[in-house]
Image (cartoon, rainbow, N blue to C red):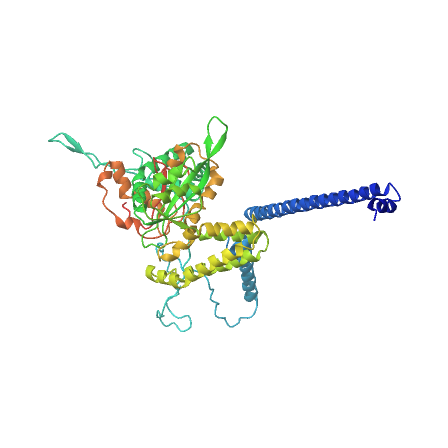
Length: 558
């Protein structure tokens, strides 16, 4: 067969091969274009999926932040679902109810007086009223009958009992003057004059007695009343108290109480378990016309230990971790802190870190508060079970609490960690849920360490509660005038102790007498009721920048 002839016969049309090649090439180009378009669309879909995921993460974060800000601005800041904090007008409601009940009782009494007499009913006992404190002085008022004879038959009455009721009263600030008279006695033979020595005072040759100084300090820092309001209160009684003079008194009070500050710091550093936290305050920045941020570093004793509670505030111009290292220099033990990096250097020196479970719980609480989240709710339930165990062991001994934690808390902690690890695998990367779980897992050794003993705290709430009242003072004094100002200032509220007696303590008297080296040991001064407030700017408590809470029920000398 002649191949060329056969091909020539089949290719009758000379342009057919070129047409076929062109058509095939067009199909190939079209397929390549479609493949490129598909690749482009695939890349576009992938990019948009990434953008959509990032947008969802951003929306979730903004929703969480918005819910947090709304709760802080308009809602209850407590993380507990407390019925007490649910209504901002509870006090007004209680006042209205009491007024309505009183008016109703008056109307009923008026109606009863105009109607026929009825058989008296047994008065209903009102539940919920707490007994008045035993330490308050009692002024007895005896109400005897007009006659000691029976109004029916004239027989002498016989006492068979007493009906005792108590009412709480208050005496507002009452100004009075201590007049010190020191007779002068002369010896004619020796030609000398003798007189009683002048008693030590907080302010030598000052007109303010210790009670007035205590009233000024307590009103300013415990009740957050500015000095100009104290000036007005005194003026109502015809007493002239210059706010400048009171400011000087406040500064001198702190210097006088310095021995108590030093002693409490020393006692605090003897403890083996401490809480630490810090809170910002505004400090005036001269020359710039604005304020800068300074910090009150707070250190607290362990609430689960048997010693008296002590809280110390250390004012510093920054949040640098070097301040905590300086305060705790040479100290060893367990330190309960949050995840702030300023404390990390301490743990390289032998101090053992304790993590705050309340901070880990807060991540899930805020996540669920922003919008219902099943994972956050389950985490809250699991953490709530751990706190229920703590509530059960609150009144136990350290050994019994350690056994309770070993048998009940440790298995729940192990189950919680395993659940967090498994849940993290199914959570989108970068989401708020993932960040909450990552925080817990990253801090797990420190968070779970409390369950290894019976005297380690589960969270840092005690010191956060001590810091919280500082915010009340911030609303009044707004900012600190200088670095030296807050280092001289303090404020305290102690349960079971009369703050007005502090300046009368023997330590203060010895301080002014120049005998601080001979202060007698007084262990009882650091032993009883818990402390509840803070030391805020403008009350001299230390020339070194420390403000300290005093323990209650300390023995005082007049």
